[in-house]
Image (cartoon, rainbow, N blue to C red; front, side, top):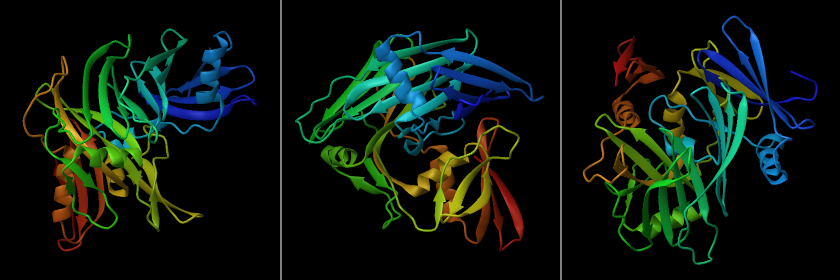
Length: 357
């Protein structure tokens, strides 16, 4: 790494690790791609040759060194607790993609570093307008899934979901609801869970309850494939729960030969070297946050709404199983083929158990 470079983030694709560094003086981002043999291929992406307005956006995203990108992994179920971040980083199709959303700025900024063409691009896809009465802020967020951009806009009085083509920005489908009106495209009730005072999920009866919770926290959207040509989309609020003692985070670099990623620290000075299998962070992160949300089932071709009951996600089923256990500890989880394996040690039987989901 050059003397003027600062570490930005890291990704993992094609059995290689991509360390991303930035040099603000030259307006250059470097992708340092390291293979299994330790060879380093350094690819520069220069941004001084773009127009001033776009460079200011890129500078705010990449060269401020203040942005903390959340890495999106498509391994397993993806929860709101992961997609709630306004700054995200994706790695797929030999591209590294940074997205940036912010309250009261109705645009998703998408910065792409293409490792095949060695070219970069900045695209701006506007959020759809949502009813606004001037009270509070309009909350925005987005999520890339199956090369589509899912955007959500929410105010005190309404919420809109837009599904757009990632390459063109063209709108494929939109759904909207207003306060005190039924959410016509939801499947099942509005659920609040993760409360520090009540471990049982709570049903919210009115749409304005959800809108208020989003207004007082963050808005998030996520999507997961089902096994029947449908997609489950979850929309809701996100709020961290402050616990004293163990604090969970998503540090570490997946795919670097570890069994997982470090996920916990205690206090301010003692690090607990706990490692989790890939995909476990999403699962454990569900337990440290509070959210209110609803789910909708859409066809994966045209994203039309499909009526019917939602199915429990893999994480929901693992949660139910874990809650039924007694005298269990040293739990872990890892992806295997098309599912997950949940492991735990039973102090009663003195055996370590592996259960496939």
